[in-house]
Amino acid sequence: MAIELLSPAGNYEKLETAFNYGADAAYMGMTEFSLRANAGNFSQEEVDKVKALKEKTGKKVYCTLNILFKESQMEKLHSMKDEIASWPFDAFIVSDIGTVPFLKKNFPDKGLHLSTQASCINSESAKMYKDMGFERVILGREASISDIKRIKDKVPELELEAFVHGAMCMSYSGRCMLSSYLTGRSANRGDCSHTCRWNYKMYALEEEERKGTYFPIEENGDYTTILSSKDLCMIDHVKELEEAGLSSLKIEGRMKSVYYVAVVTRAYRKAIDDDKDKDLYKRDIFDVSHREFTTGFFFRDDPIEARVDDDVSRPTSYGYERSYTFLGTVGKKVKDCVWEIDCRNQIKNGQTLEFIGPDVPLLSDSNFKILDENGFPLFKLDHMKKGLIQTSLPLKEGYIIRRISDQKYF
Image 1 (cartoon, rainbow, N blue to C red):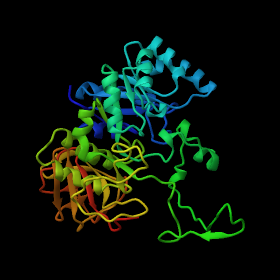
Image 2: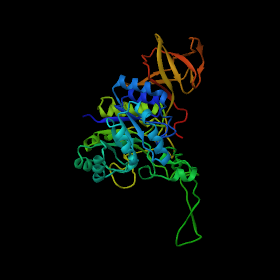
Image 3: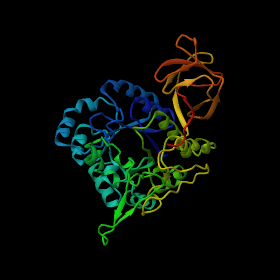
Image 4: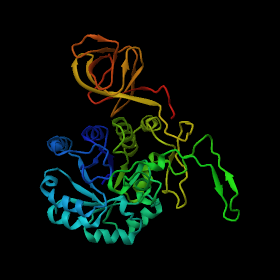
């Protein structure tokens, strides 16, 4: 069986984008029980849309029930049995073992996937979870490729999944109390404030044997991000991951943009398929917003070290890197050379726009025209306004619109 590409779906638009750009499956959260409480998630009103999309594409949808449940939340889960049953989920992703009896009793035909929050990184734990009824384990990010091989050899009937791209928590498998301590927002209940990525000023260190003597700290400017991890990127090692025994490659990012979902999903799709133009698609993941890349713990058990084999030279920074601004998506065709557009950032005549699609690395146009909904010329179209674009390019519905950013690194 071919390895699965699993993409994030923070809302319906991202779910549709993930499927259009090559994902085999997507993971989504219900508002009450997701570890990404601010991702948008899905409301009950969207059930029919998700069902229709799933039937149209034949792809899988996994539900994240991966918070650590308080007593009141467990009661809420039980009360929502009928609502959960109305969704076309193929499996549930859980970390709180207390949810297992409820899910097995009420949804016996649905799969159980163990969340990475459970920190499973050895074969004994993996076997135990399999015996409990889990068909898949999403390994802790601390598992190396050699660990994956050993676990798969010892529990061959168990599916293994791992995160291969995106943000990583500075704490062991995401078990972090920093956000809760500093802001009262719990990372283990879906409301992380990402305090590890804040900018901290450190003025001095006191050495234990020299009480009262302070040593200054300096690091390239007036702040440091010592708590913030790099972003994971395994785009150059897809074959190694597959050979190690993974059944699914998971992309992080339910809170990230539609543009991120599109270009990262597309790049990994081309890498999995060994597309002849895969390097063209790969370039985009270095241009979407990200921190400096690393291969994490996959190739070593020591602290994280960068090992991305990037043939595209990029400077590093202490913040996020971004080369493009996401402007919107192409909607339905109105007539020849005229398309509806869903505008997310201001578009002006005279700019150079780029369009990308699931199988189109790049189309460029600086001679387009912006029109209002009635077809009258405009100089610009602002964020969330409805309008049209006239271009001779062979566009299709769902293509992404972008332009080179004025500020590439921030």
